[in-house]
Image (cartoon, rainbow, N blue to C red):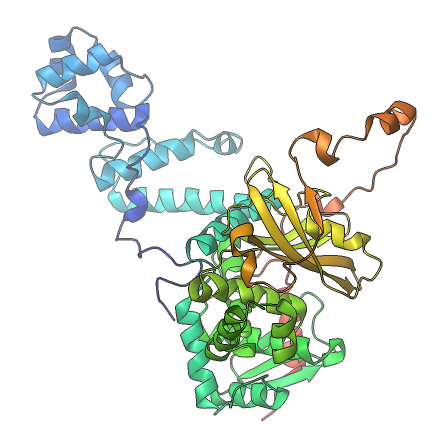
Length: 501
């Protein structure tokens, strides 16, 4: 599947040599110098001739052309006059030729501190250096820089990539028609009658694609599934966690093959693929046509409830909540937001297209931030009965929102799963008659981050907590095509389970 509507592939393919196009950014002295040299040589003028004509030394002009000196505007104006050009010819941020672009990239690479630290001599970039050698040198430098970046990647890289992915999802209202179409085609191929998809139907679906699903108890701990592409087998964990998880994991594994995934080039693509297969699995578990029909009936009755989606398709509340965000805006005209947060209020997942403002860090990332104590997603933990959905209105700095939240208890702790809509759309939702209401003034510290004055007055300066250090925040991102996966472990697993001839 190669449509431009896919998550993570929402832009047109790059044209050949697109990597050499540096346009769109301010020109640097090196690019200006190369453009000056290009214009001079095109005019058939020598370095000394042009330097004499504008009243500077040939060495000074050479420093400008090699990017070692930034020229004053008056010098560029003089050069333009002598060379019958315009100042703008020199100030374009695009290199004048492919050769010049390669020379600039090599010069910049050799000026990096990381290259200086190697103690290696610099290659002189001159006209006698063949294009093939220049390309090879640039390629080696950039491959080395990429390897260094991979080995030193931190969670900040992941947060930035996740933020960019969330922006793309918001632009599409979290709806991706091509993935919906792929799921519908597969369901039709196995004659699925509608309603919840069974384990047997998942096996038929995999068989239709030429794969066999095998559940095993010794799946490598760093994996959720392993696909043997040679023997067309997909290995999954034993379904001790429940049928829902088993079905979903199987369809996510199948999704990689249906959606035409290749080994991810970077962490951003890895995240995009992960979102795609989650979407694909949800589209199979809760088919678009039937789910939209159910939601439209509920909207007509002004009785939309996430619990009804959960029960109708025998999925988890979180899966139902995610699926609602896929379909609500595109088919019902309802903007939404979604959160999964810990009991301490820390965001693990979030999405919005309804204008709500999530807390964020300097990079714009929201994962890891703490939401206001007054938001429904946190207030649900204060309820006496944690098995029931909790609804409330919250007045925030970006408007008033109605939200419904449930507590999801897991082996990793308790989490809140929250879905919300702006006040003007609450008329369609079950639970809109709630009398629960709160006011959030965050990010004002007086709202919930600063202790109340009486409490602070008694204990300020008298408390010394020993904070729990989250060591994963300091660790580098696991290197490799599939982060954190040990290839030796995977290959040994496949060797062990591969069919013998």
